[in-house]
Image (cartoon, rainbow, N blue to C red; front, side, top):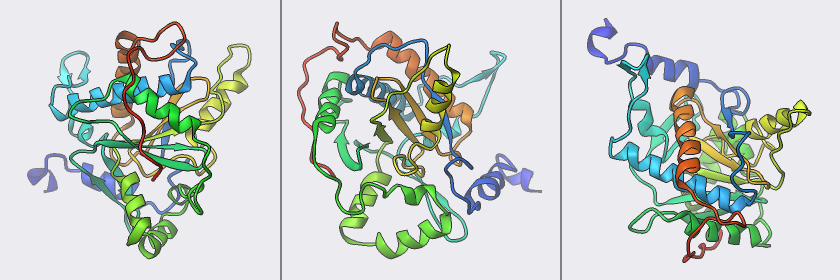
Length: 291
């Protein structure tokens, strides 16, 4: 009977009962990761690689918003439903005591960057999408910032990695007003989160253990350096390799894989680096202060 009046008779049940009603931690149990094109390393400069990937994500977001993205075709003929693409960006999974819910915002002009225990709000749109070189300046100044994390800031994201009921209670009791609410809103309403790691992402054909460590870093990191509730966290290693950690309830892995494939392809075809590995162009902007 449900199939008579719903566009897909199982999708909302699947989303609720397979994902949103689950009370166990998202980390490892639900979230998944994606790895870089390991045979291609366009630059070893962390800020440059982060900037180019962020810029590619923003151009992809614009394609989704303008409904200009070509759908995935089965055998090149049958298009798959593209509805899930709407929630790739500006989306977060909010904890509840009985069931979580997915919150999506129509737009966001900032991202949030995590580095060495501190969260930074970075503007990525001012009348136009910022160029990679402009974003690189902001990322580099975050890397050069020697300030200490504020009390409770460094391991805040561990709440998103733990039991959902506990996180829901903490969120209700301690993040309902004041600077805590403002800071949490800034993170949750960001287009996505970027984690700048202080360890390299390594790959060596003669040492498979390095690829295993690469995967583990993307899957769970330190347990408190990924915002596991966000639709995805873009992770950048200290040597310029990258990957992502994605929350699963908002969409299928194929949707995130499509985004990742186009990001890597766009970066390879569109982004240009100088002989030193920096994004080409004249930087113009400086980052705002930490959240």
